[in-house]
Image (cartoon, rainbow, N blue to C red; front, side, top):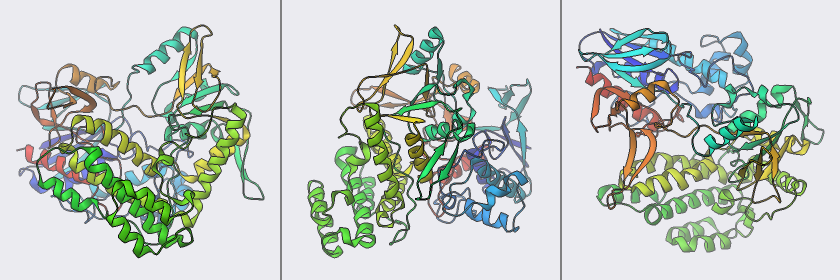
Length: 619
């Protein structure tokens, strides 16, 4: 029997299992065992496991989540259509699919296509998915699960791969795939300095990591807590130290949300580079329907792929990105809110097609008289750039006004153009990745993974609107004090306190607690994972480096280096024939936990590619 060991049984790992089963006819004519190895439950893995607080929510609409590669996926393996999370929940609640744990029944019933489900119910969907694909496994292939943590991987003299578990046991396999997902990182740089400062002065510092798993009991009631970052980890923290400590929200007669304190909350002094959370996840109903294609980029992409020269991101790609986003926005605006436009759509369309990059702003000013309804990239990137420094109370009042505007925008049907930009960004997410090999290392790191990905997150990765409304209520209640943009933290040795300032506040705010509210960046050199550390130290795993052809300068990315089949690249530059890695933290990139139904998602394409490489490699 051939054995494939998959280290990591979360979404990426079980998605790979589905692709291995779908492509099983590529394997040599002998039985196959696929073994999922993870200390956490197979399917949910660490992030989506049951038993966690129902306050922890997904950041995706239920209709936008699937684990099934459908007909739209362009891969060599066969498709496997199946229900989205929303469809699964509807069928489960109606009794057409097996019931979930009674503790999750209410979670399932509450799901609609446009709701943001709890993470634990997503774990139930993952468990069902894994059970379903195992049930449909072809003859001669079986899937088993082993609970345990892999701490080392060695090669036996006969070529067998030996997986060593933390309990001292070992598992031999013909091929091993690392599908480890998000990993903890050892504090480095400013994080290491903040941790050392906390140790010297008896303070509290929580480095980047999974807030839902952190020991938040170290945050005293009423204490000032500096929070660096206002992304999804911040909202997890916010929920756990407010509602999670007995606070609750009530809806006033006029519709405004008000927070009733339990008295056990700390006070969160929160800031970030942008100063405001990302724009709310858009959920408008589009007049034109979902954005299915870009207008200007596809022909330019084909011309670029036909050539063999290098591209300059700013010169060759940014103008097309900006023009396509502008077109998607205005096409929807003219249909959804024509009262805000000043010319017929056909005239605007013709002028927009002919406009150069330096003419788009003038055209928008002419076509959309009210600046509040124009597509403005600067407002997205730096919404607080015009707010002068002031005292905390004045700034909080200004901040509350901006959050109120954001919520009105999220719920206003006339603002459906925001959702059109979101749809266009998702298309860019898949298409730009095809040009990575044509970009210099500087452009890959600074532009594609830097400036553009930041813009993508601003539009596509914001919190659900209800989280922004909760933040607004907490600001009014004084439980959250916004610090603004350009947040900086100083380690004040003279007082033994962290001190935070920003571009929007006079002076600094002292505190004895600092939290870096974000997930760690991918790092092979600084990983806290015992298995990866051992492989890296032995030269059996290497970090991806991007090399400038002209200068030879090498830039590390922190990602696990793999070849174009997903095989792990060793320190001497060779690809190991039986070791693979898959996920967002590898040089393949693009692989996310889930995909939007009906899309040609890289998650499925990469999973199919690696699965086929593993199976053909068995012979």
